[in-house]
Amino acid sequence: MKKVLLFGISMVIGASSFSQIYIGKTCEISFFSKTTVENIDAVNKSTTPLLNIATGDIQMKIAMTSFVFEKPLMQEHFNENYVESEKFPYAIFKGKINEKIEYTKDGDYKVTVTGKLNIHGVEKDRTIDGLVSVKGGVISISSNFKIKFADHNVEIPTLYALIIPEDTDVKITATLEPYKKK
Image (cartoon, rainbow, N blue to C red; front, side, top):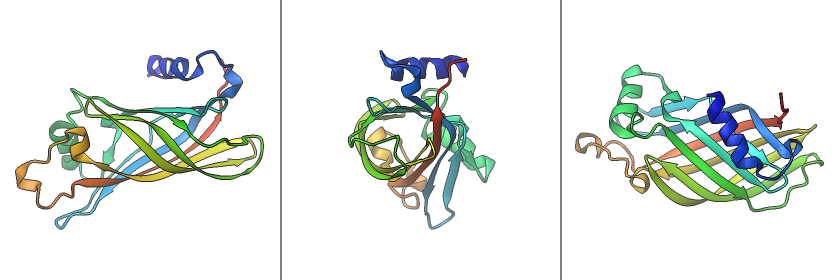
């Protein structure tokens, strides 16, 4: 995990200084799909987003096995049959905030983030709406968007195709703080 985090930091940092890098203090990524049989709901609280405030670059590497479901069998099916976590262990987003933000000034900023989302080994260009909030030096990010399973070659077994929707609602909330080199 430490190697993954250090790799991610090095990708975002490039030639910039550490004071421009913010790292996730908390992060929650959830998805929800309403079905006629039972709802599919999972949450991941172990992702660490990185943000370079000088460039607007943002990235997340999300361990698929870190999504927790209410029912263990759902979690097993998600990892083994749908996202194939053994073969595709991570979802990765690398993007850039399009708007200029004054990170030294408290406020809420509506943003769009353009980047690439890789799920199940399939990378797709995405532009995602979000909100960046700055308060007392703490940066919070949030977003709600949809992901279509077919866009990432996630196959729904024929038996469930009539009850599982073709997409899922994704919600991300995170607080970030300045990265401090140890």
